[in-house]
Structure formats: C-alpha cells, structure tokens
Image 1: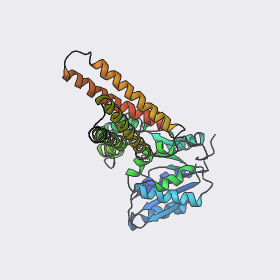
Image 2: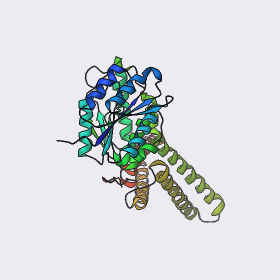
Image 3: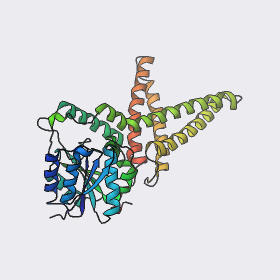
Image 4: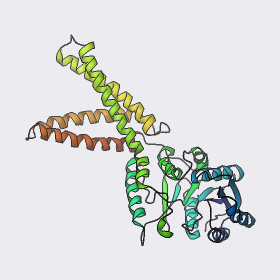
Length: 360
C-alpha cells in the first residue's frame, strides 16, 4: 500500500466546465489531501468553479489574465514549493476529463517507488485514436529518442509525476504556454533525470480537436540539439580548412611540401577539435555535471575517428567505379559517422551524472 497523502495534485485550468471539474476534484479528494488548482484568467464566468473548489478544500490560485499552461504550472509549483515544504512530489493533471483518477493514483504510486525519476503517464494510442495524434506522437517519439537518448512513448501527455527536488528546475524552465511541457522532457538529459513511464488510459474528447500539439513544430524543437551539433560540425570544418590554407600559404611556405602539409594539417585539426569540443560541451550537451573523463573521452574519439577515416579513404581507393563511386562512399560514410559521433558524444563522452534522491 502507498501513502499518497504526501503528494500534491496540480491542476492548471482555463475556462473549466463545472460538471467536469467538480466531480473530478471530489473524486481526487477521496485519495489526496493536497490539491492545488490555478485559475488561468478564465474570468468571472468561471469563478463559480473555483469558488466550489475552494469550498471543497483545494488551494486556488488566480491569474488575472490568461498567461498559458506553462505559466499556470509554474505558479502552482512556486506555491507548492513555498507552502507545502513536506510535499514528496507533485502530480500534474488536466481538468478536461482526459486523465482518470485511477491513472493519477498510478502515477503517484510510481513516484513513490521511483522518487529520483520523472514519472510519465503515457498513453499507448490504442483503440479509436485520431490519426493526427497517432502520427504526431510516433514522429516526435522517434526524433526525441535520437536527440536525447531517452525513451518516452507519449511525449504529449500532461499527466506527470514531478519529484519535489525538481521544483526549482520547474520554476526556471523556459516556456509560458504548451511548449513548457515539451521543454520539460528535453531538459531531462541535462538534469540527469531518467523518465519512468506508466501506462494510462487513452481518452480523447471531441476527436481531440482542442489539442495544441503540433508535430512539425515540436519536431523542430526536439531537433534543435541535433541542429546545434550540425552547426558546430560546420564551424569546425570551416576553421579547420581556413587555418590549414593560411598555414600552408602564409606561415610555412618555405618548408618542404610533405612537412608543411603535415604541420599545417596537425595544427589546424588540433585547433578545430578544441573549438568543437568547447562548443559541444557548453552549447550542445548542457555544459555541466558530466561524468569524469569527458575531455579524455572526446579527444580519444577524435583520434579514433581520424584513423578510421584514413582507413576508409585508403580502402576506397581499391573500389572500382571511378571518382563518382568514391564520392558516394565518402558521402554515405560521413553521414553515418555524423550520427554515430553524435550518439557516442551524447551517451558516453558528455554523459550527465544521474541525480540521486536528494536531487544532487
């Protein structure tokens, strides 16, 4: 048996339906003591909903104007962190009927068993699911896995269990509207937090027409890290090639051809590698809390990739078919190594230390 009295339920609400939200809150109160709901500027028309919530024993917070789901969640997190210091964690849930109380209990129980994880209440998109939601989540799921190395089946869900030690990060997380929840998932790698997913019911109301999920937009957001990595690779290439030419033509013009080539190549590659290392360390993969040996791992990888590239280039010379075949082999090899390098740096070189239960 799990004691769930120590967990807070946080419900952001914008223009909630009385006959949906009040029965939902009443059922929650049979299990949980701490329920916080945020009136996100719905106006006087919906004040009776929040008045009733307050009468039932909920903590009700108000935004004078609509500020968005992310802002409402941050308002709730700030209140819980300040007023409920003994709270073991926070369960975020929607007020529109998409989250069943039984599933909220399941997420709270998972958080009790895995207090170092962020709990995801994930749908499996079985049954009569709108094509937009099924395709959109499949697309973002694949891109998210590539970008972060983390597996989350349902990237759209708002039913999540947040450990109390993550509340400070929740308050500084960027995003005021629906992008806030995607940003939360994208930051898990940098925080050293592992997602733990439990299966919940798939409930859609009115064919999910009110959904704010945009597969293309979210896909671009998730891909930002890979795009940053690509930009760093291009920058390093430009530095490498430009410095090589400068050294060859202006610094060592009187040296023998083989000697000046070797010296110029070595210096240019060393400088571009240092630039790429610093860029990836701070701009792409978070910049702190890496496991020991990141620098040694990175430059060992550079040497291995360099030697492997030289071997492939030498072996390609024996492949019949002429220059176009050799060029095609190089393009395929470079494309494969781009992603291989990214994954090795993500999961090995710049591996973030995992948080312990104290949040350190």
